[in-house]
Image 1 (tube, rainbow, N blue to C red):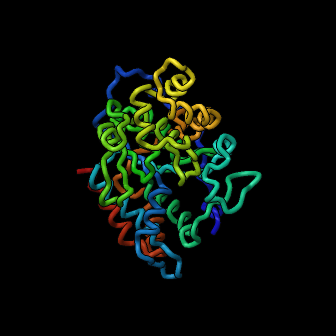
Image 2: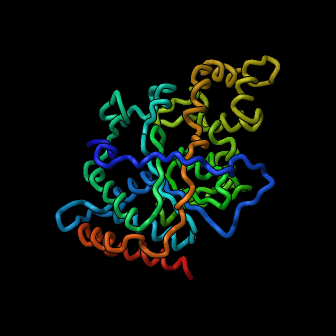
Image 3: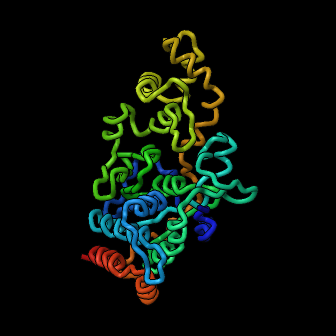
Length: 339
């Protein structure tokens, strides 16, 4: 098991400055004639790898993750008709700046630590060898891929979703991205934890019904709750119910920390002691949990093509890797956007 990045070049970090959308106030409305779909690519191809039965190319190369991801894209494009779509990439699945703040961050997934460049993540070999094929097929279709060195796909998604100027659907199985939900800006999450075919449409009401916090409070909520899958300890003794209650009363994490330090705030002795004991963690964890929203990601060239950009290359890849069926389904979905 080796890192995905050891076999496929990381997606080139882009340096074109973001357009001025993020600086706009709430007096603008999203362009509802367009719709941006942002795919958490690794979340989706891991899900395809474990959910689609093993199938191989004529030369024996496993391709179940490639086929599954293409079928996911075809299904989502047919159902939601996005005008723009970006496959967002993990150029660095465990950024050093996050590890410097919380050393346990994703530490349990590390196979080898590298002094230079991303650490090596535990990835099944049969999946690892499919990632370069995925990149090649997306390029043949002309589907945009964006990544940024030193950042995760979550950060790329956050940057592109913020100030997009159009409704945004974020496709992911990662609940951390609930923090991006913004009803007024038209940003929602298509949550695929139960499968792409059974995904849930997450808006602020959905988040509040499930966690008793608003989406804008979700990052603070997750910081206190912690997440063992990401190596985030959370505040010991503070679970979802307590975290939600504190946010309901004090608004946000700075308000909670301030209330814990203020004897007159009315915070109960139990939560107060736990928050104060976790002060070192709470001083750094929010930056780890919050997605970066200010990356200079290129917003140009994200429109979905109506026909494959490089049809001969696509035919070559489809024949070589046993992808004819899924490639045809994506091609049909793209053609349907013209109707």
